[in-house]
Image (cartoon, rainbow, N blue to C red; front, side):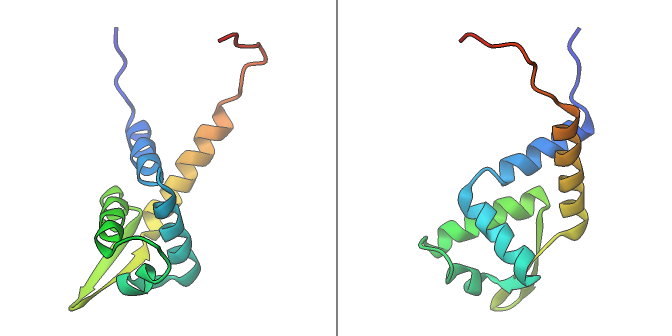
Length: 107
């Protein structure tokens, strides 16, 4: 019998996938340090094209880790505090509940 994924497993995987790129980690660090930031200001910190930065912001927003406020022609991004706390809790719980077996794996 196959076991379905729990809601927490799906959420944790979504957050982990969104954070699975160093540019996205840096974006999260910038936003967590500054509170909020306009996309143009974030672009000043990266050696990547604005279109590439936009894709990274889109992935983080889609995962729910950040939120954006459109104020034409600017978009202001902030950490989504509720989902940030949830991601931290899920990651902490996952790592705390899993211990590495003491046996040696011969691969």
